[in-house]
Amino acid sequence: MTLSPEQQTLDLLNLHYGSFYAVAPYAQQTGHPVPVDTRGWSQIIVSTLCGVKGIERQKGPDLADGSDVKGANTWEAIDTPRFNGVLKAGTKSASSGKLSSLDAMPHLYLVLWDYSPRKNPRCRVWVVQPQSDARFRKVCETWYALRDDGQIKSNNFQLHPPRGKDENVIRNTCGNLTYPLYFCAERDSPQGFRLISFNTMARGSGSCERA
Image (tube, rainbow, N blue to C red):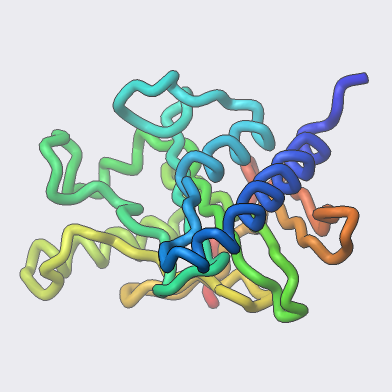
């Protein structure tokens, strides 16, 4: 019997949780961060949910359809995790530093590994349609304009996720928006992660709202 995408994802989350917290005591004992590949795990989770594979270790977008995946992980974190490098800037790409860089990206997935207000490990995925989401594009356009004007010096467009909060507001200095929630699972029992929501419509009809 073939498992559904959401059940496969729950199995992956349990696998990740088990390996992460199995090594955590050794990391603490030796004074090192817990080793975790947030980027790789986030990409695997998204591909499992949406059915779009990666690009087989080649350079370029994260998924075969041109979509990108950004991850942030607060599990045992010693800093303040954010979604980094969301926009192209400061690279040799012809579209770098331009709003047109979004035109080839059908979806942007934002994967947050955090703890819920109930202190339970949790994984959430938001999805944006950068080609058509007017409010998201406006935030990006404002950031690019401020960068071109010299008011923003960094090439790193960051989005600040709702770490530890039961909300979907993701923040940036150029605009705070409520993002479409695609998937949410929380580990609230010894049996493992439990599915909270999986909105498959978010990939096609979801759009950002003013926060």
